[in-house]
Image 1 (spheres, rainbow, N blue to C red):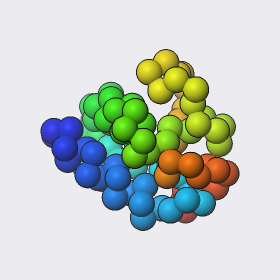
Image 2 (image 1 turned 30 degrees about the vertical axis):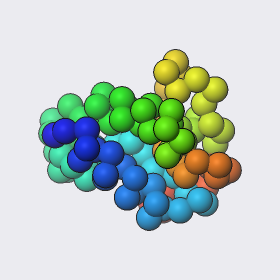
Image 3 (image 1 turned 60 degrees about the vertical axis):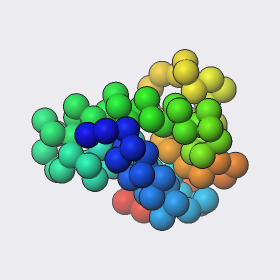
Length: 95
């Protein structure tokens, strides 16, 4: 799986979800790797790397507890992906 494929999938999912909702990074990994954890789990670090790059480019937002992270290079814990400038108040459609 290359970064271009991850980027394309991430941007598509974030755009489809819209400003009111967010995407879990595992959704990006599952969209690319399939439903088996042993397949999509290995994609979580590459997904995070691409997300950080896209935040730096202003193309996605990384949110923790509904707020953009202060430093996309240095954050911990569960995070979600959203449209830049969105409130991030909503969750994904499945939550």
